[in-house]
Length: 132
Image (cartoon, rainbow, N blue to C red; front, side, top):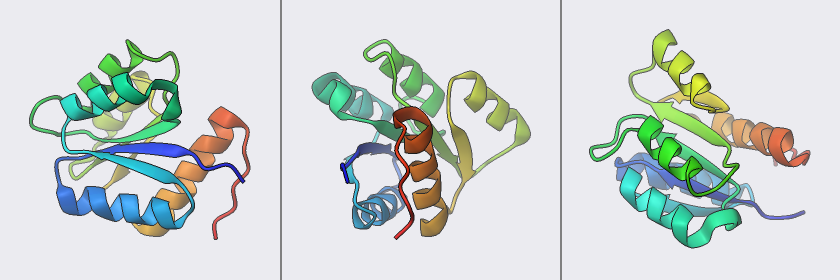
């Protein structure tokens, strides 16, 4: 089965590394960014090699929404999942309007992140990945 590259951008190193480790174990290739600006640079550098992104809504330099908007200027399609410690219905609506697949509340369980990423890949790339 093909490996998909997922870019995780979160200024919380513990959260970012936990998501990366979980997705690596699930068979994905992950890239980590500690800020929105770093994530945009990775998309600029790797472009279509990145299949999806997981973005923290609240980072110090750019918000997740601003980061995704800048990424869309570089690539036509980059499915996104937002994560936040401060979820609300209004934030979910903003995320969906920005083109996100969904918004997950932190802390995100490893099972939920794997299932959500696999559903996203199925929707955007037509793959059916089962949870290991």
